[in-house]
Length: 331
Image (cartoon, rainbow, N blue to C red; front, side, top):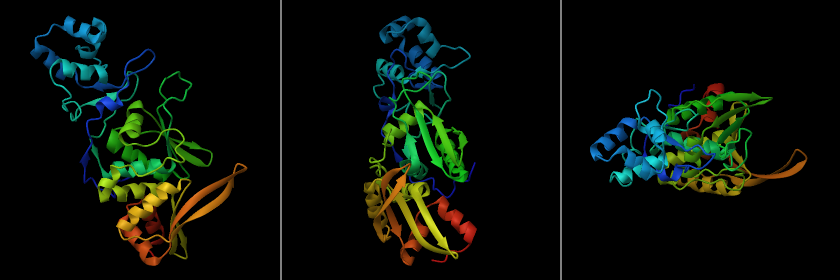
């Protein structure tokens, strides 16, 4: 995995408790997102309450075996669906207490999946990852049918022409979620593919990344705009995804970002201006792809002073790579 120290660990802004938002309520054919490593906590609540177990599982409308699987002392921790865990909290007078949300020992998962951590704070590393996914990443539409019969399509896909960017992203995924998604080679490109309901719902619902065809939906999420460090890292991730540095004779000629959706480029233009970076302009880029005419937009930074500011202010793997290849920049 690649060193991600160029992305700072702070500042941090706490998320509101999002447990009710990410839950998948139990229904036939679905596999709810579950808490893991909470059995002792709930056993302690039950013992303190003095309520008979039978009354508890009857109030939850589940059978004894299911309840004992969730809360019992079996060797394997099968987890407890979020919706039932939250109901138990209310049953024991805990209301919407944050004790589960803030418990650093809890993992999330489904019955036949990996177990993941979920962050409780927005951080620069997460902002960078969101920028990358807003660029050339993809969150599947959860309603799209898939071959294994699941009712929730949880694919997260990021495609690159070279592998180093994806290795960086696996390091960030592991830092944030304790999960290292696999990378595949497909002809002339590489693809990171994660399949996780837990992470998909977090990125889509909590981080507000569009799912399905996002071509006209990309933007800078509101929480990113709350801190300058988040904005810088988001732009760095977006640039590493959809940006380009043109170098000629060891001179940087232009720094650019290309997108179909002009709105996100206008948003980035506005944010760059806040850091004293003025762009040269946003231009139309017409082309042909697979026999179909295409229209994209390109944000250019061409003036020497503005390029130098961008290189200094925006954290970017591409900038570091160009620096490594060509030594000290000539602007």
